[in-house]
Length: 138
Image (cartoon, rainbow, N blue to C red; front, side, top):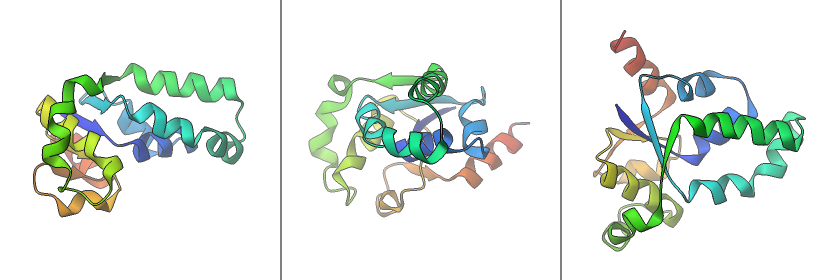
């Protein structure tokens, strides 16, 4: 099942070994993200390293492990959709995720960002929804 991962889920997984991290490593899903996710996560690297008391090397290693299970879609693949989607969500930083979801024909976007709730193009999944999908497919 194709699912788009919002940066807030990756950041949550980097901060704590939690349900979010377990879901990210679940092989039942085929995860995708726009290449834009790298710049979003990079903005929070210092915060994450300080909050978790891990080294830069440990951060990089964990991030690398997370991205091993994720397909990154380059902006050139979804750029043609950006203009059409610009009024779908209030936060312009969310448009690449929506465009990636449409481009990949994903089942939905996994996020805890409520800006996505205002649109009706793509289904939105929270951690609870993701856990229900895992349980349903067991």
